Length: 164
Image (tube, rainbow, N blue to C red):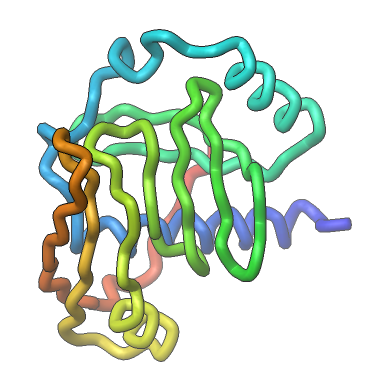
């Protein structure tokens, strides 16, 4: 059983890593759909799955898009070999790899996969410096487009995280 202090540290670590993984390397705000677009045509099966996870006490993570200010709670759906899938009540999902964003579904341009090798190496070695990331997106023509992001990994010091 996880005590409250350990859960707080785990939650803070995940939020910090999620921020670090997206803070220096993000998509354009135009690629994020509105809440109305995201929730259009939701299936009862999707909302029932999220409710079932919540009732079972699944781990939770609050996600916020910095540019738009939109936020919501996501529930841990699966955890396999270091990859964690998080599900929102509207069926959107995120996949993290040791806390770094690896894929998204339902948040606009689908982030199909991310090469995190250089970022992982720098962040987990506490080493500052440049890292390239390769993001593969699904286009409107059902083709995959890969973009390269040049990231600057920096230690910005300790932060206070408020958990609502």
